[in-house]
Length: 487
Image 1 (spheres, rainbow, N blue to C red):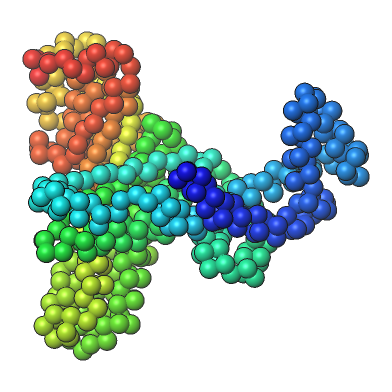
Image 2 (image 1 turned 120 degrees about the horizontal axis):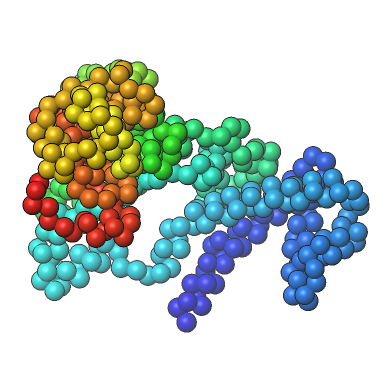
């Protein structure tokens, strides 16, 4: 019974609204083929009924063209089908926008327990302290990956965001105009997306969705655990693979990684700046105006200049000072909103999302081999060394690596690892502190990376990086549990 009610409400919230707005959309004319929007429902019905009768698809299409259109030539038929695809693609965008706009209502239909309900339930069972202790140490990490076929151009992303808001307000006139815009806007990128383009598309969602959503969620939790000193900014963390995953995308280079790390930081500074502009209009008090203006100006410089950075303390300390002044001098006016902003800064710090580096074990092996050749420790291959000798070199030997002495992928690997310390200096240690090794085979998968980190960036054993092997073969998984006493 509950499912029946939910299905009926879903039809009202999503399906019926989609049908209304789709009727506007189907009237949009495309060049060369008139009334194509009106022909699509007919084409759907004809194909469905005729396929159920077992008819051949080619015969169905020939019959459709001859009976319902004046399309005769093969070229016109192909053009028609491409236009159909264009319409259907945009109908998918419209449907997603309608569904997104009704998300809150759809969630409420499920009657799931809210966070407040869990608090009451834990209190009724005398488990509130235990529940809050768990919450204070809980952390989850959402990792963004990328694939070039998954991305709309930025112009289409903006249209989707605009449609979502217009549909929620049922603004029919502006919806009509926006659908016309969508109908004439290409959904295909004008050129093949570069790794930087992929990263920028994902950062778009970080800025437009997750920045505020995570802040709202965190504020909601704090509001419902009043009376406690809840402070767990690591509750939700973000990992980021576009621009760092060279095993998943061979076009990722050291320059890409540096550019993406800068884009992440600069996009976050833009979010902070916009929030501060809002506070500037509210906190019009003499004793805080100077602090707000000073921080705003510093943030502004970091949005457009990659060489300008702010440390976490440079952002959070002025906010704490403003907070103290609001409490002591201005009746805590807008204090809740300021604390929400402070929590965002504590969550996202100066990196937005942690840029993960991933490379295949075979590349590290090739790189180590080339370095040891330059050091005249081997002639041709690592096979010339015993296991114990290689471990000693990797763990004890101090090697000075000059990136200009190498070529191709070895050079790029060395350059990438050499700049990781720079990325941490600009974005904070949390901004890039995981090195993931694809196709790990044995202990050398980890030792190769550890040695490269030591030789190229950190000259001591205190390396602020998590080295994470991925065992993706049967042999690798069997070796993963072995205790190597030689090491």
